[in-house]
Length: 286
Image (cartoon, rainbow, N blue to C red):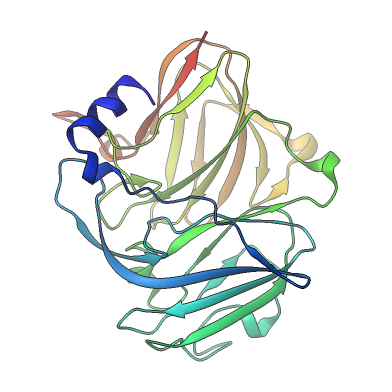
């Protein structure tokens, strides 16, 4: 944790304690990896200064828990609706049976308050994917019903060889402009030692496009929507991520310093009082 983050936590420990996007370990039932997911309403601190916002989400955090599996795994998600409204869940980017595509009134009836619905499918394709509500989604996803669904390749040779694997989910509704449910300066910096390779999985769960810009070193863009770019991979310092898109980039942390990492639509990141919202830092030590 950097000095700024330590200072914020020391001054506002109760506000900064809750963080989303944490890996949820499945339980094993026969051949299935089982994830228990509960949708509920809760209060959430976007930063350490502003009042809480009224969020809805999964397992009490925004973003919801990070689900990680391997290509070919049998996945069973037990979804309990503790909201006062109906909902549904869609696994964005996955080739699932139509009956569990999670679109109420099209492939299933809505999951009513107090009900449980089980989503079961074989994980694939591999890559950086998402899950979110697909019912009253403008409101429900905008208020936090979203999370990362990471599918590792079955073939170990196709997996990323990196020192850090960062999931970066943007949203632009509840609480303003956020990264993983927080706004600067409450966003978590990326801290690396010089020479490390960092994978960042950008995911846009908002309704606006966000061009992410890194100071000090470039990004090597290696996959879009989970699909490897292969010989079409490219290098840039700004990558635009549209709603629903995922882009995987690898950063060679070779330039020591504290480097700004932010959305380059400047009204999403900077104002008269300084930087806010969609801003964090890449800190390269050594």
